Structure formats: C-alpha cells, structure tokens
Length: 360
Image (cartoon, rainbow, N blue to C red; front, side, top):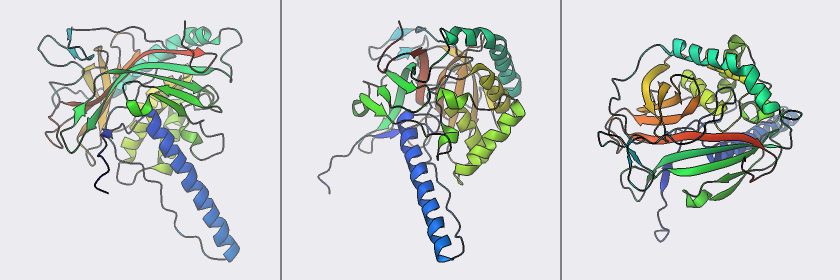
C-alpha cells in the first residue's frame, strides 16, 4: 500500500462547504434508512428497541461559504493594497489582508445582540423591495436555479507539511430552486472539483430535509425569531455531534442556512434575531473577507474542540453580507495565532433559467 501517493488534506468548514454537505447528507439519509430498517426487523422479531447511535458530524475547521442579507447581490471586488500575482491582497503593512488577522484575541466585543439586531432591522426594511426585485414575471419558479459566484481559499496540507492557504480562486454553483434537480459546481482552483454535479436536496419528509437550503425549503422556515430559535435548536439536537456544544452547532447551522442559498427576506430577519440569542457569539469589529473587503463579523469559538474562530462578515454601514472567515486563535497544529485557515467572499448571486447559465 506504500506505493499509493499521499493526497492533499483539505481543512474544510463545519458550516457550508457544498461538497462536504452533500456527502454528509447522503450519510444522514443512509443512517436513517438503516435505523428504520433495524426498527422494523426488531418489531417483527418482537425484541426491545435498542438505543440508536446519533449521527456524528465530523469535526472540521474553516469557513463556510456565506449567504445573502435580504436577497442582496454583492458585485465587484474591493482591492486594497498590492496583488502578489496569485490573488493574494497585501495590505499597507505588508500583511496579506485575507490571510492574517493581526489583532486576534484582542479584537472582539460582546455586543452581538446589538449588531445582529441592526442587521436584522436593515433586512426588515429592505424586505419589500428585495422581494419585488426577485419576483420578476411571476416570481421565482421551481424550474429555475440559484446562482452564486464566490471568491474562496481553503487550507491544504500536503505530505505532512505545514498547513497552507490555497491561492484565492473562483467558485460558482447552480442550485435548483425547489431542490429536486441536480446542481452544478465549477471551481477551477481545485482540480478535483473543477466541474462537479451536485446532488438534489432531500425531498420533504426525507432525512436531511430540515437542513436543506433550497429556496423552497427556506421559504417554509419560521419568520418569528422565538420560533426560529426553537427550530434551530431542535434541528441541531437531532443530528448533533456529542463532542461539540449544542450552542456551537446552532451557530454552525445559521452559517449553513445563509451559505450558498437565496434567503427569503422575512426568514433572514428571524434568523439574525435568533442568532443574536445564541450564547457565546461575539463581534469582531474589523474582519476582512476573501475579496479584501473590511466589515463587522459575528463569530463563535467552540473552545472544547478547537482554537478556530468562525466569523460571518457583514458590511458595517449597509448590513449586506460579505463573506466568511476562520481564524486560528493559538500557535498550534501548524498555525500561528491570527492565521486565516479559510476564507470566502460572495461576489454575485442571482436566479437564472438554466443550469450553467450566468446572469447577464
């Protein structure tokens, strides 16, 4: 077996890396089907029901791809400083703006409810216009696709060497509006996923549907913040990792829902207000996304599992969602404190009529 070459290991996000999610959802469905089959066999045999082992979500670190605020479309790249040729934005102090957080461990504030409340208020005020913008002729149809264009960089580790952040590269996904059809991923910066079909989302009533990010499923989520919070915790309780805190899983699910998706405005309002009530969420007043754009982030650390801080970044003035970042808090596991282990920026999102079609 020693003649098999060692492949790079990717430190993927716990939140929203699409391919990881597809793999995990398949495992959830398979585990649930196996459990149901076992219960039927036990019932037929007249034996007592055995305890069911919970599905364990892998412990992986890094940023999930981030979502939109009130269906906002983010366009263009705000470049600060010089470019070293591979997309790395270097700030005036010589530090890569997307690869390092120089003030880590001294850069947070405890005003998450205020910040998320302000973001929710912006979403609430823009709900009517945002909904009208996407309605077009007859609204969003089931046969259409949600298109998301991102700039991303994930960490890799080759042959036992130190972790290294990949060069920034483009990532595009096309997702079925109702979740019933195959989607598509184009990510030329990753040779293994340059042109990857994406599985349909679970159908209503099927295992994994509660975590589906199809537009039609997101439309069914609560629009009341209190009800949304109860739904979040009930959802993560069903599939939680017992080695990770319930509050951390709740924060991860928030990132999942606003990731590569189109979030209905009223649902986003409830989601942000519910996220403000998750214990341990803090604010990073100055966070930088993969496009070099500065914003305010809400973040959380699962101190029992890792020293990686997961950040969801918003425009400070408009409340518009920018992207997501993961930052190492300690000198450990090949990282320096402040080193970014993964980063993403949403550049554009739209509804298109066909798979592989880009907005005009």
